Image 1 (cartoon, rainbow, N blue to C red):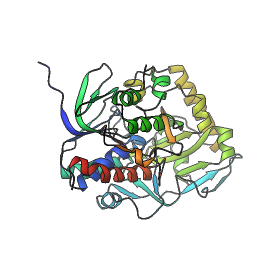
Image 2 (cartoon, rainbow, N blue to C red):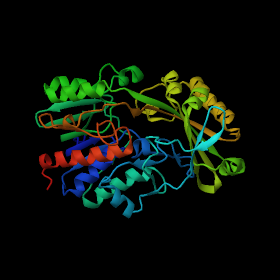
Image 3 (tube, rainbow, N blue to C red):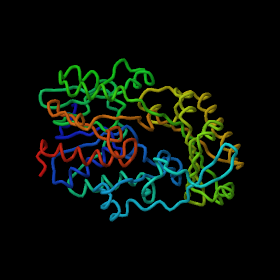
Length: 398
């Protein structure tokens, strides 16, 4: 006998910082209704996720953001409980820069990703979102449904029905929050071969002018991609990397143009292994926009067909550039490729007044919302807290 699809008061699509922060913020404001987060990946994190392996339990690589920054006061309200719970700590690593001649220098001033107060997940970046979910769970059950692709959004008379790739019903919800741009942006068609944009279909069916405006703004938002090379070096090959005077290396504009790399982070792992994460420049990612890692969610759940030779070529190109730029060997390293299709949204972002559409019972949060911290973890935290303030009264939060 088929089981009936679950019903929840609130469904949140995406368990990155925005979605997890919204869950924590609502719970801390006293709301105890039923809620579920749906995430395409194996766990929470989004761009603060940590790459792990079922076959290699010691592998742990922060393959998106190696840190996050807070640039203004007052800081997001959720920062203090994350600190108190030991989920985050100050980033202590040295930051350096590289010029087009391969010369090391001081950190680049006014880098939007490295200014202000620097933080990291403790012990890994994934613990930012794990900590936020823990804050939510302390107040009321807040399940995470991972490995789940939401392909269709269907507005109903009393909320939303979310459907999967084959049209199967995932759940019904009275209110919906989307904490990312994939379901709203035409790139889902060009990259994954979908024949429609899910939020566009939902907005047109709803007849809600506010939702149609929100969709149009999200669909028109450009973003910068990133092709990230993940290297895991065994202990006997990691010595030279371990001795580097930096833990995060920024490439200046000319260096990015020469080598196709934006920044490199070094990460200690278990058993004296060493991780190196190479983030491509925007131009390099644009030139290889159709190449996805074979172990990525895009390949496993979104139907993007891995291209083995193209994947190897991209990894080879970034690997060569890294060795040429730094004069360090990557011999013996295990390699993976991770591509972020929308690593950094470009402004102006979704206007805050469009982030909640009461008539359609849908809201939006994340770093694509205009305002302080736009395009960064700070923006995701702040947008989630603001949405919780506005959404709470509709949900019955005190």
